[in-house]
Image (cartoon, rainbow, N blue to C red; front, side):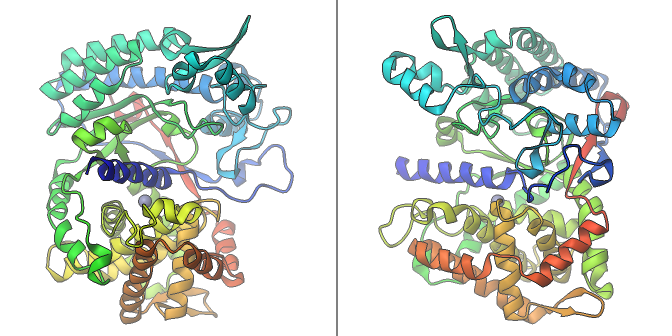
Amino acid sequence: MILRRTTELLLAALVVAGCAGSPTRPAPASAEVRAPTENPYASVALTADLSELSDNQKEMLRLLLRAADLMDEVFWKEAYGDRDELLESVADENTRRFAEINYGPWDRLQDNASFLSGYGEKPKGARFYPDDMTAEEFEQHLAAHPENAEAFRSLYTVIERGPSGLVAVPYRERFAEQIEQAAALLREASVLAEDEGFRRYLALRADALLSDEYQESDLAWMDMKDNPIDCVIGPVETYEDQLFGAKAAHTAYVLIKDMDWSRKLARYAEFLPELQEALPVPGKYKAESPGSDADLNAYDVIYYAGDCNAGSKTIAINLPNDEEVQLQKGTRRLQLKNAMRAKFDRIMLPIGEVLIAADQRTHITFDAFFGNTMFHEVAHGLGIKNTITLKGTVREALKDQASALEEGKADILGLVMVKQLHEKGAIEGTSLMDHYVTFLAGIFRSVRFGAASAHGRANMLRFNYFEREGAFSYDPNLGVYRVEVDAMTRAMEGLAREILILQGNGDYAGVTHLMEEMGTVGPRLQADLDRLATAGIPVDIVFEQGAKVLGL
Ligand code: ZN
């Protein structure tokens, strides 16, 4: 029981990795310095309604923003090194801004290709390890000094060269200056907190920064239920360390809970068991019961700092990563509503203007986009995690194909859930057509993340499957797509069935075949994607943010 739960949670964590992963595009032909007109990011002011907050709460927010800035300073050191020296060396203002967005001279949307001359390739392990250290040297050191394994593999140490070889230095020492200030700010903020749970969490998080022991604060974070203000802060995700995926990078989100939307989300979680029951597959492919501990809430983010602010931006969080905490308490899923809104306004709507039939464009709505994104997250919990063919977990059986298929499952099951909830009258404010047309526009948005991204491949598969099944039609004269409702409903259920069965059977050969056949971008779709680039539609967003933007 515990084992299976662990596997599920591991899967959940991996899936989140897929959700939050950076979209990538093909590397540029040459150009060492990117021209400003090619900047793939739209700049958006990050705001939220703070009018309900007390003076104490506003003061607390100011302290949290300052603590977040310290995480940003630390992340610069982890990702690149000396921020000020780099930025001062770049004369062109747009290029300097681009270096800020990327936290260094390497383009995160283009597989870290260098956009400034003289910097070479980004070290795989960023600055968590000596630049010239290889994976072999690291392993050899541990073979000779097994007593160092724990410290070397710790999430919370950097590896440096000492006088007599490699040494592990704890974050609390390596980044002492920033860490001590941040802990003091969290303590101050804790005193101002009006919510008892949040007060306790902030105090424990301050302790954690100073001790590099995070578990107690993670448990306290899971215990918070009603606090209107939230903050994720400290070393959290390990994507920045591409050498071993072992070192956690410093990050901070400051968040305001959206009570109205959170109440709506709580209602949907109740439907999970009956939605699992209604999946369009034979009983044996839906024999597991979905997690009922889904803690799903909506937030506005008022600050992204450090790791989460580098390159493309996450619009949903699923934490904590500590498996022992997950076993005890589950995880919390946070939907970041204003960031989603920004992506909708700046990317989804313009894509619709170019690629969706004029009379269907009014169906591209934010509420439908939010719903589709949210049900994607919820749908990860449906279906099955273990094969019914004794091949172990779905993830083990499907290996390198697992992520893309799981993302594809979440997308399509999310839409199946929307349809079923609509039939029950459980969704208000959107029509089914809104969800369908917004979903189709969303395929074009995500296909642009490229074949290197699990999301990109999942969307290519879906586009080709939908095309074959007539889920949309194409007007070659106008270059626009139109949803064909009945065929789309059939195609969506057909694809959901196909994916669930491939997963349940752990059919690696079947998935590989399907992906080879359908996981690519054909010439017409490529031409349409090129039109999006020509129209200057951004791939992702960056934020103008901070106390001034918020009027704090
Ligand atoms: Zn996902």
